[in-house]
Image (cartoon, rainbow, N blue to C red):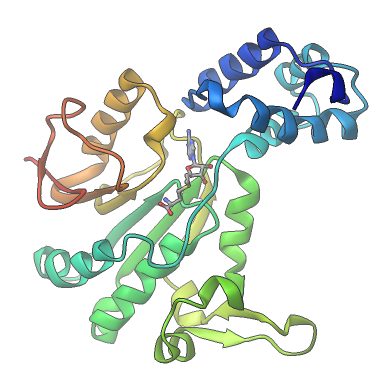
Length: 276
Ligand SMILES: C[S@@+](CC[C@H](N)C(=O)[O-])C[C@H]1O[C@@H](n2cnc3c(N)ncnc32)[C@H](O)[C@@H]1O
């Protein structure tokens, strides 16, 4: 878009300032190609707050007197996701990971880190429910977290349009979702058997993590694509600490731990296992 046609003035240094603040707050380094996206997503906030330009807006974000820092982060995250995205990971959990989990009374702990609107966590719950006898399913716990509070709320609601679940086969749909009626027509909701084992929380991966216990498997997929190398290194180091020795890590199809972390052994396509 030509600058002249814009509602708010937007210079390269405005873009740089946004980029700097986002990197500092969330570890996300936006490439130049995202310049127009930044404008269109933040122009809505400037309009809503009736501030005249980006510099005043960023002051407002920094001061954070009315929660604008959260709105800023929510506006700039990319939340693309889908049920059973990279479906081989869920098969891998069912076939390879479950037999490695400790027997006994303890819980089996999973983390969807960067869960967006929840499809990843619910897909995992579905895979566990289909693969496990009831007693083992009930000891599973899935924590789903994201920096973006609005997607976390949507994930926790567990309500999706029929379009979002169109790729699931009819048997899966019936078994794991309830169809909306009346005002909810055209929507589905995950069944209570799934909500029993999944919890959603807002969490910035750059902050301290409040976990008391390690996870048996972590999904951190399509999250670090815009993190720089150092941030990725630090994150995967912390993830290694948060995963049980011998526990599992799944990353996105365009991501790799090659030259990023030596704490994991590759176990197939974008699947890793924590070294002890
Ligand atoms: C492209 S989505 C991926 C969703 C899902 N993991 C998948 O693969 O389908 C990336 C998610 O990472 C989240 N994210 C980005 N930076 C984050 C951070 N510093 N802490 C927590 N979540 C973050 C975004 O808000 C977004 O919802």
